[in-house]
Length: 294
Image 1 (cartoon, rainbow, N blue to C red):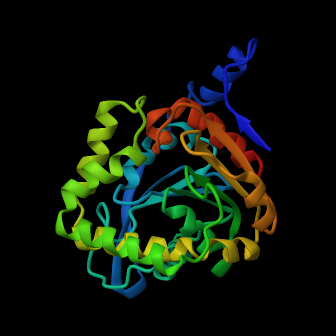
Image 2 (image 1 turned 135 degrees about the horizontal axis):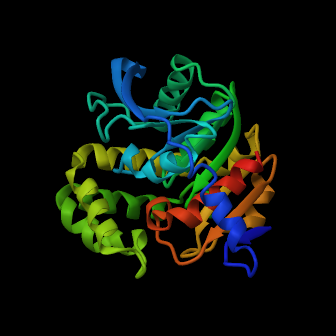
């Protein structure tokens, strides 16, 4: 069953109440720090709040922890919030050659252990939907829930030889002409007509400022991880909730077939690939509902 978030007559005061749950309180201070994770890699993170439940926000490809600031403003009075820069991005280290999602899952495990986080709900945007799956299957301790943000629209499966060859050609094109490939080939999948120009420019700037080699290697790793989705979903320890844009269909029946504990979908109409910054009020409401399902 999917839930589409639309205005409902008579719900105005309730929605305002949800949005302004803590409007009359000052938000806890957000701090930025870093730890050392897998392979002597420095990983920066921001945190706030002292709630019993931890929301661990994991950003998508080539962006960073700053994309979760609207959620920090909204949720810090109720939960503990942590948002890292994954290695290779933002303020985290770049001194690594292994960009596999197995290593990224170890990074998240080390972050949870070093910060002594409890009752963790993993929240992963875009490519980090696969990271959420991998972490829950491999390191389930202290995890109580899984939420994907505009990802996992259908369970991925291994590619055939033709698909793999086409993917290799695309990655070679990225390495040969990174900016052109990003702007001409990828932008239509990242943005919708409703996506504000300021957000489009912000995302493009972050992508183009990323080391192309790291960008491509992480993309390769994500493609590899996506081919394991059916098997990973069968091994999940928790239900999967998704907060997705309606720009592309989400095949909920197929997800429920593979997810060991089922799947739930919350749709945000009219958003592009970055609903947390494109439509923060609608997104925060949908996210809160997904959190309550954990």
